[in-house]
Image 1 (cartoon, helix red, strand yellow):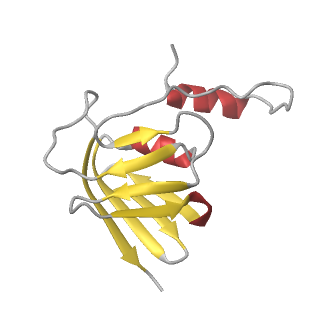
Image 2 (cartoon, one colour; image 1 turned 180 degrees about the vertical axis):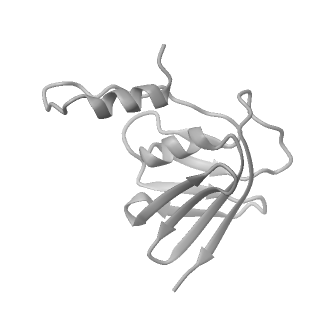
Length: 127
């Protein structure tokens, strides 16, 4: 069975046809994030360790960057969101495909089965 990244690469190499059904992604969930069961969620729900939450519309995303050492950076017109942790490449892949429902910062839990760990989510206002 192909993982998400392999299917994404395969779909990029194939010509797009309106006659072919879109392959649905397997639903993925762990303590730190969950993907949409179907369709594209309107917002990314950021769940912070203090219990507060911040929903950012995917339509506002200007850029998404991944660096193995620095984590994930999401830029909007007025915010910079920095997600740090370990094994975040799969999280980046789902973000780039606009498939994440939520991202949860660490609240004392351990890693997911595949080693994913979200140390922090920082939301900064930029003007």
